[in-house]
Structure formats: C-alpha cells, structure tokens
Image 1 (spheres, rainbow, N blue to C red):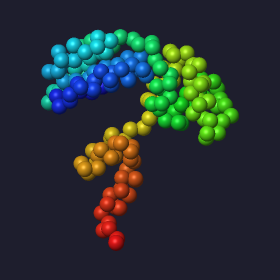
Image 2 (cartoon, helix red, strand yellow):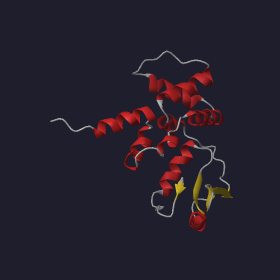
Image 3 (cartoon, helix red, strand yellow):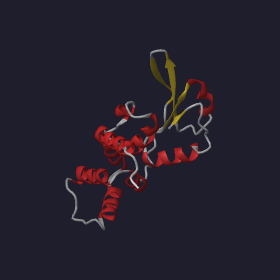
Length: 172
C-alpha cells in the first residue's frame, strides 16, 4: 500500500486485512517523514521508506514484513481476471477441465482451493507479474485523461481513438 503525505490512514486497517488474504507479504511504502506514523500500525506489515533525491528515488526497507501463510484461495480467485485463474489451473493441473461459461467460475474456484497455498501463492504472483502496464504511456496522455487511461488500461491506439472522438463536435 502506498501512502503519501496527503493520504489518511482511515481505511488502512481494512486495506491491510484484504492484502493479507491474498499476499504472503504486505508492505506500506511511504515518505521517510511518515515512517514513525506507520510503524505504529500492524507489526506484521513491512515498512519501506521512499526517499526523494534531486535525480533519483531510493527505497529503504525499514521493517521487513512477516510471512503470512494464511492465504485465502477464495479471495485470490475473486481478485484476478478469468484468463489468470484459468492459467493458474492449467499450470498446476496441466489442463483445463471441461466447463462452460455458466459453471466455469465454480469449477475453477473448487480446483484453486485444492492447490497447496505455497504453490497457489507462487502461481498467483506469477500471473500478476505477467500483467501489462500502461504506465509508460500515461505520461503522454492529457492530464485529464490519465486516470481513465490507468483504470481501463488503455493502449496508445485506443487512447488516440478516444481523443479523436472527444474532439469531434456532438451531432444532435
């Protein structure tokens, strides 16, 4: 969880609780000036200080996260995309079972719950690492469209189409 000087920690406990359900380790990444504030939080959560230098950023681990082996398979399957949970099943079992659109989630959920948690964690993290990010392109987006670009993971071509449509007069 990234926390800036502008963030409130009102929802932090809930966020950390959700992270503990799906991640083996959870960290708070924050500005070095806020370290003391977050050291008071749950001691199972690691703390990383983000130091801003004139030409670089440096991350320093202040407190390591405690390993959490109590991962919730149900929370994992609900937090990933369909192609990702199907890939996890295919990787672990070597094939996908016979299923259709109506029973796919239930069948995959039952199979994922049978995967040993250590293996499931590795497969889950592997899927997250495969996700493509558009943050490189975001800097070229109009400031007003950056949030939608991130939320929808818009590629450069789709962004150009969006801009063209927004620039056209509305036909009534």
